[in-house]
Amino acid sequence: MSPDKMVHMANQIATFFKTQPGGKAAERVAAHLRDFWEPRMREQLRRHVAEGGRGLDPAVIEAAPLLG
Image 1 (cartoon, rainbow, N blue to C red):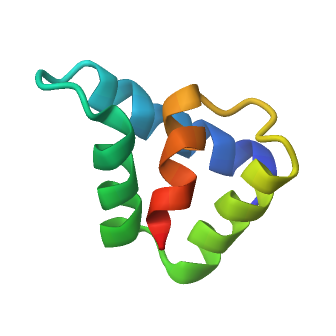
Image 2 (image 1 turned 135 degrees about the horizontal axis):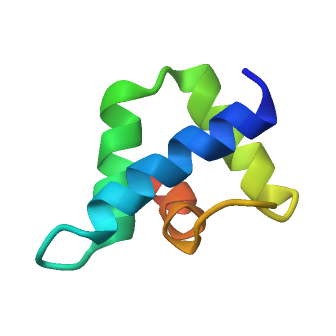
């Protein structure tokens, strides 16, 4: 997947979970990514974060290490 599309999708997920009550957006983002993104997509996200995470919402960057 193109990096721009991946960033856009991940940020949409973060935006949703940041609006939900109870906080813990990063944990919820990580759970969603584990449940719905295939392993290659999660690995691409982890690499993007390791390279600086350009364009990613802070909740996504915080979620990346929680992906396992």
